[in-house]
Image (cartoon, rainbow over all chains, first blue to last red):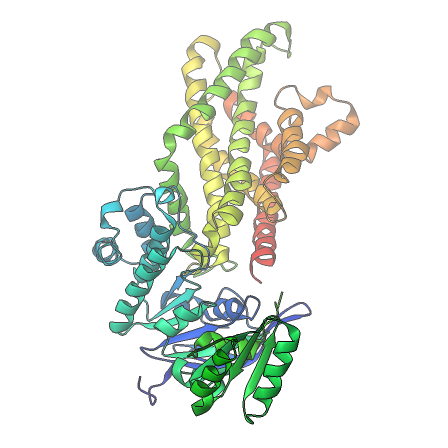
Length: 312
Length: 260
């Protein structure tokens, strides 16, 4: 990614309010050309509200939001012409055959018919749907509908592809196929904006991530940087048999100095052990504890920052 | 160029509805033809033999122009009721479309134009049936009948806009029933289609005057019977004003509902 490149999306003190509820609470971010930028956060974090403002279907309450240099407040139609939007819930035309549904969609962008036909063939081939081109959309499986949604968003050859939780509700096979296609697009230099609460998805696809919670951005960076700076390399996971045992272990860990202990019901997570990790784990195992040292993931960062309780 | 936020792109959405309709046309073919024929025959020939409407007019001759007003009304309000609600809230078609350069105002205008189109199709069916019956029953009496499709366009926009305004407030598919039973059904029966309004008590006559369908029925009747009068200009203005008000209202209410 070229850091000097101008941002294709930039938000300054962006706010979205619904009545008294503040869904997006003054966030700043920039998305650069050809990168995959992810909004990660639990339900209700403000991801979808942010995306809806970017895609010009929801008015900005306060702040500034520029997409491809245009102001979302005044240039909605022009911005929308440059975006490809994959919604959270499929909203394909269920009664039309696959190919025709894409053709109908291409007309909303004023794409000349011969050009549209050619592009439709290309995107159907790319998403392995060419054999289903004459099938009525309603008869497709969930995974195929999702692929068709992404294919549809590409018919207009958008400058930015916006995906709102693109794999929610898909089975693992279908999810991996979607990821594979998205990596392919990324390889072709398509700028992508993605919202997800799936850590694996964010780690898989995103060059940079912001972690959102209750309308604010808690952290941003590359997945690897976020893990090292917020959690460290490894996490020790410990399942204590009873309260007494847990108290003993917690006292022992407190003696190690600069570590973070998260005590969650029956599991204790220990972060920031650094080089002490292996021998602490070995010692606990010798004492007959159920301890496990594993690599830190984005999920640890996420849970550490957004808390382990339900937010809704 | 836009009109109240509506652009030429509204035609793209109208085309979309047309494409889906043409895909499913066989499912939509029978009802709009069979029911008006049944009504004209059953009420006109059956019940009509017991009814005297004055002059040398048969009941069937009285009834047929009214059918031209009410069946297309059902087609338009149905389309912008059930049809639009399904597209808006169940298939999320509106969401899909407004993510493109098409705006919500275009979508709502297109839904209304499409509701009008469904009414116009219904009008053409009924007109064909009436012309086919004319040699036997003398249903069409004037070349002015050629203007009926024009009236159908105006009434279609009016009924579709009224229906769309209600749909914008509907909380479920079932809640559309209130509109159909409390607004559309009374218009169907009390709009001067099945009996002349001047046979009603004075109070009801005033009430019926406020039903949009009574003005459409009056114009259609005049065109079919060939007795157009200056007073029908008043009916026309009434239709135009109501159309303009509800068209703007539908867009306003839909914006309030969907742009959040």
